Length: 350
Figure 1 (cartoon, helix red, strand yellow):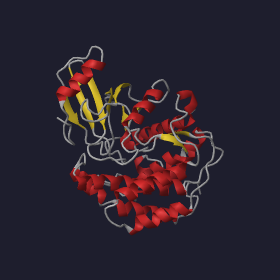
Figure 2 (cartoon, helix red, strand yellow):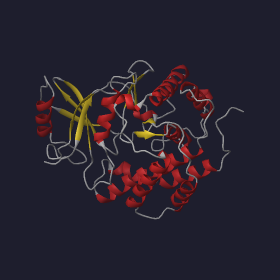
Figure 3 (tube, one colour):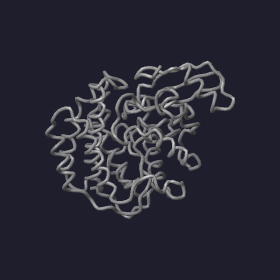
Figure 4 (cartoon, helix red, strand yellow):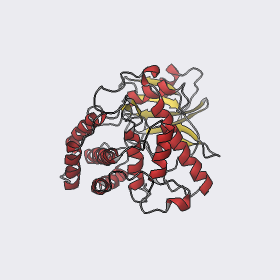
């Protein structure tokens, strides 16, 4: 039986585990995570331990999308660094084995915070959570890809130009209707591409608090997950993703910090966060992130458009949530256009 958007054939999965994991013992139990809109993700429980399985979604996929193979490669390369990542166990590139390409990694117990306001924590704990996120991002960007065996992990040339070209193609290929604000944003990005600066670094690609696992009883970062969009390029892209998310309204679907009094919650403002990152990353000055943030909005809109198309095609991992996400595309584009019209350097302290 081919795995659908809601289940796995556990008999076939168990055979794959028995073949590759020394000491593995069945039977298996499975629960699907509520995250993993792009690549369905499952927690696999067994008498010999717990594991996480990530697979490609069903249906016809866009070129270069859902690259679980790349996730496996980068996490394996990072396993001996100071960055906390799950230990990879095996990759299966034969789609016939369980019906799709997949990989298995260790299960890291801990807390995933979906709401960046972190209501369940104290102000002091929130400060530590966000400082950990800042520290680990700077550490990631200070790594030398060549020493990690990732010299060929991304293409040469202008990172933002490559990324804009890729996500423009993805957005156009998955379009189901005309969205004027997305087209306006797309045109602005095309006409304002920055030049490439500095050596390429490893970019996570989706640096948000809900892609981080914190320890169960302490506000320390235990694991960085969801490396699907990682590549080599300009590290400002990850900061752009971070600030893009914070600029969105609060709520289960947008998960932003818009209009929130961050100081009262112990959460840093954009300026303080970027300045601290710049110090840790060895930058001589605070960077201008206008293009990076605007591009992050566009890319997220393109991702959501891809999810919406999969819903309409009947291949979505979570159709109900996918439709809700699809309705947010104009909001992301509007927020990007508003951000573009702000002062060019909104991050330096006044």
